[in-house]
Image 1 (cartoon, one colour):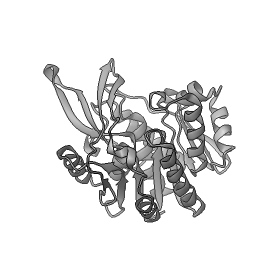
Image 2 (cartoon, rainbow, N blue to C red):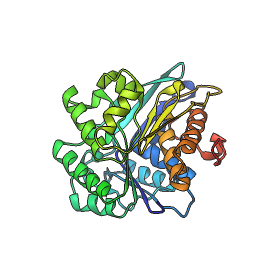
Image 3 (cartoon, rainbow, N blue to C red):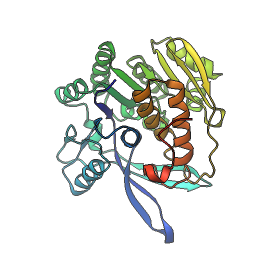
Image 4 (cartoon, rainbow, N blue to C red):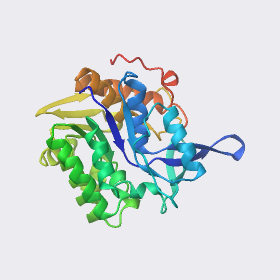
Length: 308
C-alpha cells in the first residue's frame, strides 16, 4: 500500500505540568498522535494527512502551524467560524496519567458535517485511521455518515485501521458506547484494541475472547495490546504473539498506545510483516513513555527504523 495515509479525529490544545508550577502548552489527541508517529517512521515522500475541523481563531492558526511543522498535511482540514479546538490538561502521578477536559464547543465535533469534504478526503487516501474517540465526539448522524464512508473504503480494499480507545466519560451511556464501537470495528479491516479496555467495558475474559468478538464482525486483521503481557495478533486467520518491550524508565504514559499505533502502521505499510511491525511498535512505545508529553521526536526516541 503505497498511497496516502489519512488520520481522522480531534487534535486538542494540551496543557501539561512544567517546572515551578507552570503549565506547558502543546497540541495532541489520539488520532493526531498516531498520524505524528506514522509520519515519523514513513519515508518523507509518503504523504500523511490529518482530517478534522478547527476554528478561525488564533489558537486554531497555531494548531495548524504545529501540525504542518510535524510534516502532517493540513489541506483537508475544515475551518468553522465561531468554534475553537478543545483543551485538556494532563495530571501525572508516578508516571500514570489522568485528564481534565474542556471540549464541548470543539470544532472537531463538526468534522463529518460536510459529507462531500469527508468523502473527498477518504477517496484520496489508501490507508485511513480513526478511533473510538473520533466516534465519541460526533453526533449520531455524523457517526453514521463517517461509518458509511469508512465501510465503503473497506469494501474498496483500502486499509481502514481502528483503535477503539474506549473512554466512557465521552459517551452518553454504556449501550451507545458499545454499539458504536462495534459498528466502528465492523467498518474496519484492522482493529488495534487494548485488552484492558475490552475486558473492562465488553467483559472479555481473555485476549482470545477479544479476538473472537472482533473477528466475528468481519475484521481480518487484529492487534490486541495487553501492556507488559505483550501483543497478540490475528492476521487473516493466523494467530501470533510478540512480547512487550520493557521500558527503561516510565515518566509519562500519555503517548504509549498512540505511538504504538503509528509505529505499527508505518512499519507494516513499508514491510507487510505484522509481527515485525508489532515488535518495532513495542520498542517505540517503550521509549516514548520515558519522556514527557504525548509527542516525542524521532531522535529522542532513539529506536532504529529496523525492527527487532
